Amino acid sequence: MIFITAKFKIRPEDADRWPQIAAEFTEATRNEPGCLWFDWSRSVADPDEYVLVEAFRDGEAGGAHVNSAHFKKAQRDLPPHLTHTPRIVNFTIPQDDWSLLGEMAVPGEG
Image 1 (tube, rainbow, N blue to C red):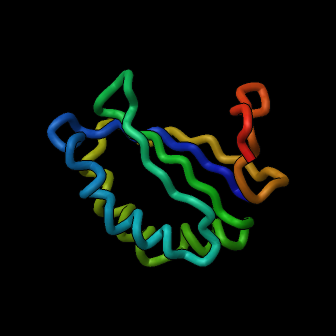
Image 2: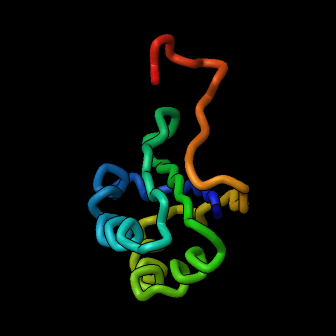
């Protein structure tokens, strides 16, 4: 799968509304057949920063994502709400879901 994490610095006046600002893009991406997950979290250290964790089935699904109409629309609509270009980590990894963190296993789970 293609595993991506990106950090978005949002303009302070837009930070509280970011989930709504990005909602159309988020919903459309989650509905892509090759999207495994697309999840936003707000930083506890910086209320103007959101972290996006996303995964796509494979390179073909990732390519379909960046070539989609909703991605192109997001390229136009989202940057005016940002203070910096998002930072990204992008890797292809040989798995298709989250692994368990065995070092913090919950007794009796499973």
